[in-house]
Length: 339
Ligand code: DAH
Image (cartoon, rainbow, N blue to C red):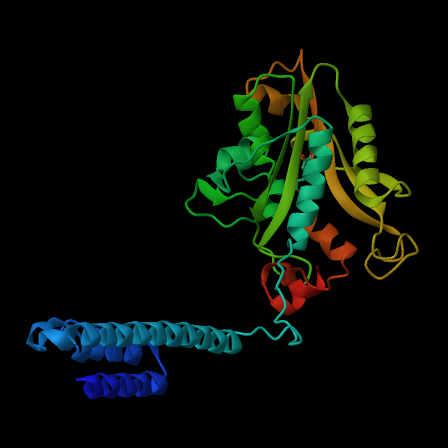
């Protein structure tokens, strides 16, 4: 029996030594120490051992069991450590590797200009509103004093959905919506997309405008000019010069066109400003009393002024973009240069 126990110890130690993963080690444990294990069955059958040998055999068997348990637990610790080291080796981060780089997005130049303009207007007390890009002929033209067959419609050939519904040609439609909905005094600004049947390097069928409208008591041309002067300085810098030309818009009387120092050549004269040093930025004017009345505002008590810059041209000029279409193509090569 003694030899048998020693043989078991030897065999088990040898098998434990050979194990190179936790699973086989556990199989060895079951083989010797499990319920049906070789050592367990000896311990279980102690009654078959002659009584005078029982004590020695018992002590010997328990000693073997302790040695095996000890060997298994040591081997198990070693294997776990090895597994961990292997995993660490495999998952090691090479901090000297060049990084993939984090791709950062940026705001589109139109959005940046839009935000800048909105910030300026909000600082001046304007409320930002938004309204329909698909609108009726009434809001886009009629209520702005541009009746059917008015020659001013020629300048804004639209994309019609039905005879009466069109893609708005100007954010000025929002003047009418605002006047119908708000009680004066109010100051609103509306950024938005507009649509016209136009297409060349500086005109796109889709482009962006703002509409700013102030309705209050006793406001007029001098308030409009002062406000535009402040806005241009905030937009293009303190040194910007402003030039005013008479213009015609059916919804304003008088109507003016505002030019500012050409941002492409900083006023020196270039092909864009045709050597004048100025480029056109705003259409503006004092709201025609007829337009106020049509939207239910008492023109004897209230007056108003409005301006409506197109923003795409300004973004083109300030960023030296040769074709307006680049602004709408979402070409990454172009957008990356605009960051
Ligand atoms: N809506 C005009 C256009 O698209 C621009 C404009 C001119 C807006 C005069 C105004 C204004 O508010 O008062 O050409």
